[in-house]
Image 1 (cartoon, rainbow, N blue to C red):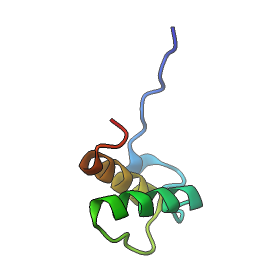
Image 2 (image 1 turned 90 degrees about the vertical axis):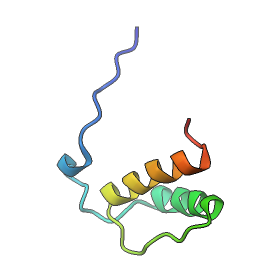
Image 3 (image 1 turned 180 degrees about the horizontal axis):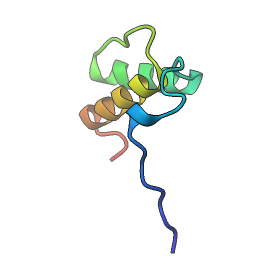
Image 4 (image 1 turned 60 degrees about the vertical axis):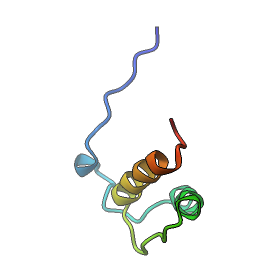
Length: 63
């Protein structure tokens, strides 16, 4: 049986204030294009993660 780690609140990420990673940015642009949205510049890792979750719900990815 595989135990999942509880997800840590984004506000408590120690690196959440750092700029988003390259993979986050790439995936965000893919999702945003599918959703017909623009990706804001200068997102942090935590903000990018939150936007990824929102766009996944809109596009049906990650279901």
